[in-house]
Image 1 (cartoon, rainbow, N blue to C red):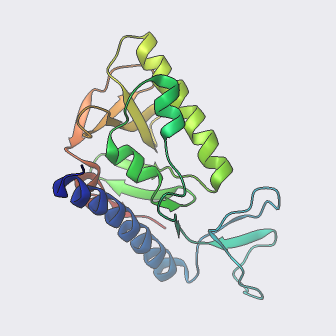
Image 2: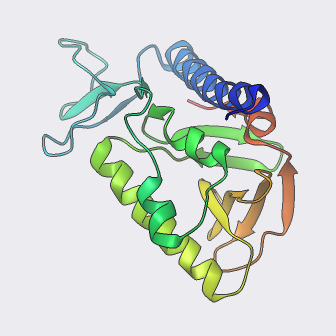
Length: 196
């Protein structure tokens, strides 16, 4: 049976991610006057793509995009947990199954970072493979399990979840986390300023 605290925590993570994504798009529009754009790839479509035509700010070959909500139960990490015989922290699962999106650029006290999300369902599969590789490396190095969710402007430095507590840490790839920056993803996102 799911506790009400667990349900509230799940809703809080998803709501926080979606609110930040909306704030990101609003800030982008305010600063640059349009939705964000990305190079269009007909073989890599996404529900994020916006079909606006005849806009003078759209660069040839690009498409406007904005984060798109993922339907509840559309994606899950059952295969990852089964393959590794582990249970991922619920915040990790909620984070990556809240929205489809390009990376969202942000600023925190320690510098710039890019929040990582899946662009489409195929990208979610690729993300899962990368997470499995990261966890296997952690196990091989006999380190506590973390799951990355952001990259920084410092080479080989990532932001990750601690799988046991859900706390947010800075770590160098292949090394133990070295700096705790928030007790939870909700607290961490509250510290961020979206960048255009």
